[in-house]
Every structure is written in C-alpha cells, then in structure tokens.
Image 1: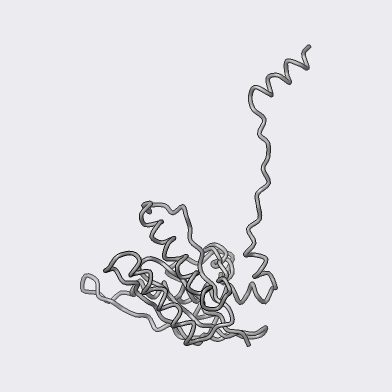
Image 2 (image 1 turned 180 degrees about the vertical axis):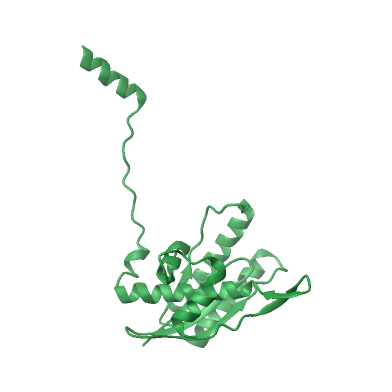
Length: 208
C-alpha cells in the first residue's frame, strides 16, 4: 500500500488530501484546506506556508506527493496574481522536497480532469467534488457559507476537491507506470521556417 499527499496550492487557499492506494483500491484518508496568511511581508507568509506543509508531511508520512501544476497564462489574471501564485506553488514544492528529498509529481489541470472524467466530456469545476466522491465512494461534506441571505457552497470545497482529483490522477498514472515519465518535459523540435526572401530566390532560380 502506498500513500500520496496531494495538493492544490493557490495564493488564497491550499487544498490537501491523503490517499492510500494499491493496484486494486484507493481510499481517502484525510482532506482539509489551509488559508495562507495575508498579513506580514512576503517572506513571513511563505515561511508560514512552508511550516504548514512540512508539518503535514511529518503527520501523514506520505511515500510521494502530487500537485496541480501552475498555469502561467491565465485569462483575466494580472501579472501580479500569476507571479504570487507561482511563488507560493513553488514554495510548497520546495518545502516538500526539503522534507522528503523527492520532488512532487506535477500534473496540469487538463490531465487531471481527463483522468477523473466519468464520461467523454470534461467535468466542470463545480462538479468535481461529486466526481471524486463517486470515484472514492465517500460523501463529500460540503462546507457552507451565507451569501445574500442564502446558504451556498464555500469556495474551499473546490480547492479540497481539486487536491483529491490530483491525488486520483497520480494513482492512475502510477498504476500505468507513466508517472515518472510524465515529469520529463520533452523538448519541442524546432522547425526551420522558410522566409519569404528564400522562397522568392528559389522561384527565380527555377525560371533561369
């Protein structure tokens, strides 16, 4: 039996899940979320995040970890938002590496959603809590908050669900034996583009 600690790390909320698995089964052991501090300078806040992550590694003693990778080009996001997200995300990864001397497995959001989709269509974000609950056979205890006099699902539910989904994705990739291979970024082959000038020269040479 293996144990994976999976994370969905954003600048506002970090979703965390612990999944135990083997070739036939997987079980959700624990799920929670953490709010990175907003007060203090950047280094104080990153230090608090680092301590939280390493405490969880000590508490649950995972064999490996997985994280949803950052998207550097996000619609409607400012450069400041993307930079903050990238710094926090990599701080989490470094905290893990320093603790267990293994880098976290990184999976992009598209791969994760393809891994957990129950049909051909990719599940929208609001459906992911129900999708992961169905895969792992548990009842998702939604946290609620009041908005305009109504009880609605809190955003933290989706951060937790994304962390669980990332863990499920890793389990599937590990079972297929491709988890390590997916971490190697393949270099794109550079294709030489023919310039307009070269094309014109060739045409002229053919005529003469």
